[in-house]
Length: 581
DNA sequence: GGAACTAGCGCG
DNA sequence: AAAGCGCGCTAGTTCC
Image (cartoon, rainbow, N blue to C red; front, side, top):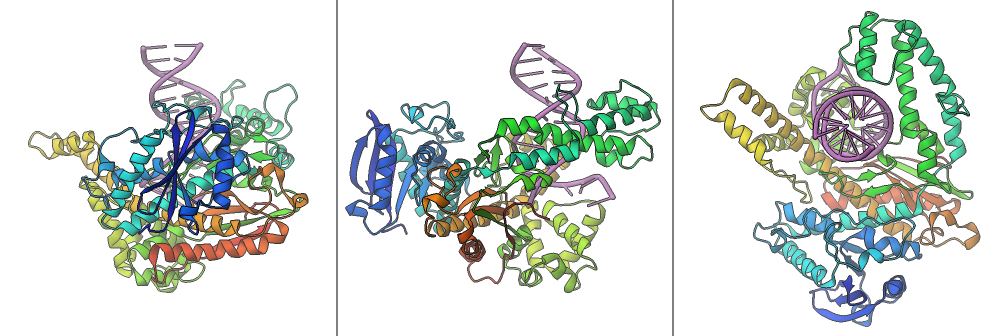
């Protein structure tokens, strides 16, 4: 399956770094040792002219952890084409239902649940690699890495469906490359534009600290209506007591609860909460901490979520408020391609379930309009809540009421999520299209179920167990869809990355040096969020980049679902700011 | 005085 | 209409 592919496994050893060339079958061809400082240069040479034994094939770097090994390369201006991230692949293989239960990769080891190695931004030196430190990050010593790689290849070859699990490992590995590159390049961020939004929304920032103007006004108004000049707006318990005193019997201070009450304090209070949120999460302090040299550089954590979605750490990269997207501004001479997939999850569901009727409704731009058009429900809004209810497991309200209509119209798709829920409720494990399995039920969960079904179970225990079963069912119901959507998105990202790399570099005077030495001279990914991405591109390459983003979406669909007739239409725009309607 | 918790809200 | 999935982050609160 991997015949002809060349692997170069790297790890620590001796006085520095050891690289081992393997042929497609895993046989060792050569081995060399060099110092940490030579690492980028060695990679540069191999990427340009692969070793004779592996010439003519794509080199794949095999390493313990992408953040740890690739970041120094990017800092030195070196990119790689392909890699295998053993930490991420281990996590997949270890729990995948597609991997045989007796595979060596599944026995307990130091690769289990190893956190990502943390790479200090300003310290590209490989000081962290000199030890095989167990506490943080997976093993990095060359023998441990070679052994793990061998275990992983064996597990994949013996898997129930080698192609799928191989695809998933490749997709997660390339996603790790993208994450490292996006951190290196950063998201172009216009501090002045951000500050303009803050001033417009929050009001002028007082020189001596304290609240911005608009917020201070709102505090004053709220206090008048609460008839308490010292009322606290930031402490939920105190605020709740103040509200009770003026006759607002709210049970919590959340906005969807407060919205239900008619009282003059409500409007300014809700407005205050909206502003306070912006100030706390993305105010001037956030700017000072996270935006440097015109770039926002969060740490992306590929597959950081159980479902395989990305997580992030620091700066709230995945929660940038829509309103602040207008601060995302391209460098001079550059622009953005901004794209998102319309209704990714139901499309993925249609394809996984081979549900031709749902795929038919999904044909074209708007899947929800298609559900209306085929007569399943009367309005687009109903189509949307019904579909979300089906994928999330709604039990009450409009959503739950409408789901049966979807069951009649799209029995195969609905059977897939219903079955995933049933398996979860029974304590079982569900698996995505490419083979990522959800965590098993915890011992406590199983114990609670046994307790409730036994003779001695009390009503309260039965109730709690039933609720826990329902919770797990909704989790597994959503897992298969969200997780497969994440796989599609990783495939999309990987394809976009590979195709962008083929575009010609721009001359030095048209480069974007703040994007770092490895990425400054060509279009590159700058942001990714579940089902949308932003490419930062020289103006002259914008149309080509947009075409790549589109065709990559189609490729991702074929890669996962073959010839099944499902399309993945994009909302796509080219423009100097990343603001979307 | 810090760790661990919750509430609330931003994103998909 | 705020029910039903997955997250991260801040501020306030509680507990040691």
